[in-house]
Amino acid sequence: MTTDSAQRCFEPALLGRLSLRNRLIKAATFEGKSPNGTVTPELIRLHERLGEGGIALTTLAYCAAEADGRINEHMLYMHEGIRPQLEQLIARVHGTGAKVSGQLGHCGNFTKNREFHGKRPLGPSRTINALGLTYGLPIAGALTIAQIRDRVNVMARAAGFMKSVGFDAIEIHFGHGYGISQFISPLTNRRKDEYGGTLSNRMRFGLQVLEAVRKEVGDDVALLAKISMTDGVRGGTTVDDAVEIAAMLEAGGIDAIVCSGGTSSMNPMLLFRGDSLLPGLLEQEKSAIMRFGMRLVGERMFRKYPYEENYFMEQAARIRARVQCGVCYIGGVCTTESIAAVMAEGFDFIQLGRGLLFDPDMPRRAAAEADYVNRCSHCNRCATLIDAPGGIYCVERPNNFLPS
Image (cartoon, rainbow, N blue to C red; front, top):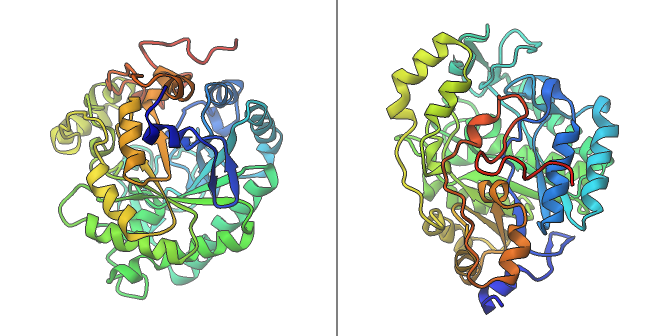
């Protein structure tokens, strides 16, 4: 049997108005199982299997608001052409007793999408799009005020589509260097108008998105916001900023805040911890120029952060103390003991990522075993397979998500 603190995690809970069978959520880690933006049987099976393993809410990533909001052409964007497949995915997951969330996001100025329709990607400020240097998208432009308003509407329309398809929750991506985060970070937002400068101004776009999405979907769809508690680079957002960002999101009506960290474009290892992503990414990168660039900046970008359990606890606890809305912990939870520690700090939910690829039955097993230990080695090879044929899987247990 589990301890009292851990037991709280395995009892039914409310996320906004959404009833969940426990407090464990599958994190929005990109699956790489949507070639050419399609919903495949493999993608459906992955989320269904997680539901069978006892997760309360599984998160489909990456649900781009529009075609040009994708980092690459193999990510999903929300449109009628994939409605039947999304409905099938959601029905299959619901059949296991789990609920389904989708991470609603936009790449902003960070993309290598070969099917990009615009002249150039657009973010808060004009900049180099390092990810797109060898894909014909080297320069990113700055959104005008009118274009910012249009992007808010694009995000809201996508959320309305997600509600109509049957998503139970939507996680709006405010972090990791993507579209909204680019406005929040002073490193990427150099605007001089009402969308730049102070933290309140830098949060304006994101809060407008939140307001528009809530108006579009109402109160029956739970809304989460994933934030980066710090960019992990000098001059970026700090934990002090994140505490105030959380308060602004609470005032804006968010149901739960997911306390993550790092940026995909500047310091991804702050989020992952463990073995470096660089070797695996070099294996998957097809462009010789990009491989050369990755080696050139490798040590600076892919910094060494040894894995430890509950590695975001100290920073996330500050947010838990600041707000009354739901707070979801993420970062290094692989044992029942760690689950108990997170629950004892008063967090409402826990997101799990790599550990579920290693053991999709982790929720059921951790509920039954007080000494449960997930044996994921944090090699991070799974995360480097997002562009590989077939997408992500645990290299130690590659058959985990095959049909039963």
